[in-house]
Length: 171
Image (tube, rainbow, N blue to C red; front, side, top):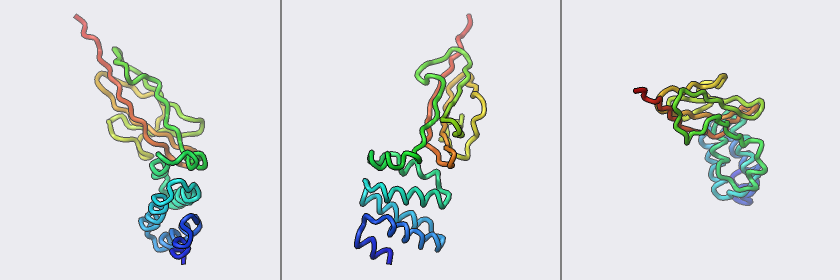
């Protein structure tokens, strides 16, 4: 019934949401997700379909997939779903500079957001260390990846920066 509604009018968000709910009820999130993937592929400017796609991720606790979904969307879609697009954290140090002394890196985000980070070169996720105090950058190269998570639990895309500290050699 939902499939015939989609064939009749591909722009109807309710038909996609209904078909996805059928798959969710069968505990098949992959098929439910594929319903939306196909819909946005066919209609990349349909903000209604993106809206129900985001709601699917929220309802099925797959919030970490939202930033990738909304990364390169049409401006109208981006404007409509702005509440789900989370800005990355700000880094206090310039990553193009080479520092001659140990540094302290501060990360900041919008009020109420939580920041998660890694300092081992891997990409930050919502399961990484929670940022609570400045990060000490010692001698050598430090790869810092960080992301912000809003009050709804929606993460932004990770921001990755590399810092170099070269202590001067004393003669």
